[in-house]
Image: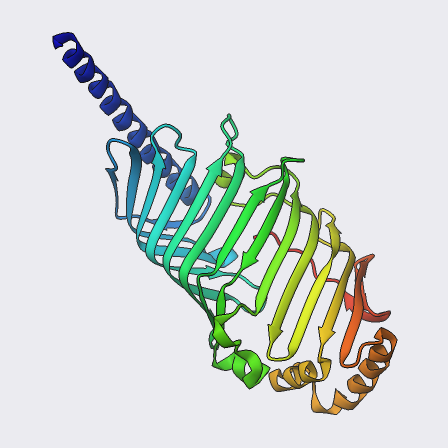
Length: 335
């Protein structure tokens, strides 16, 4: 009996030593990542990193975290961010924040995000490069703001990223915004039909992305995604009231981010979409008649009353819609 007691004491001491070493290493990794980002020109402030979770969990609590890359328009801050992982495999990492804010570049429309009860679950593949196998991000509440005010609110939005079993650099991405409520600006543009009854989603997207290399610790340390080589849009669906827009197709990108390929678009009740474009100022009233006539011809070609089936073609740096030249194709700018 005495030997058993001593054995349990030794095992407990070894377990405690392993837990202390693992949480310290986790803390050291976070500190190293902070220093690397600072050396790359990022602005990183962090009040404290504390350890917890003994005996089965490795936990580090980051207090008053703020990370920003002003030159790229990126920022994230949280009063408290809890990182945890099972002691037997730190590569299954969870991050939680009761409140967080983020800034994202979106071309001419920079966005700020306010989130509550934010959680991200990361699964890494064991190995020297720690390739990303899966990522799931969700929030109880999300508010998206543009330069002129709130754009929308979402309840229980989530994003899933899953590495393909066929190729390590291929990832399946699903965006499921949950119940969306358009803000005043979008309601003005979209009209009163913008709200979906019952809190049903008005937007969803599923796509497959091929990166130049797998997402791993090297891209994490660099703070930049690898180049996107190809994008397959399985479906993008948006609806408000009785107006709907759907897209699918496949694109490839060269080293400069110029796309090549076709996106097939389907529009339901396109005349109301024109109304929204006019309210938003995208369509001058003087052009309404001309555009309306052109779209009626395309509607007749589609064979669906009130509907349009259009191909958006990207080739040689240019884009055309249903054979109509639209000008230079936009380049994909890596975040």
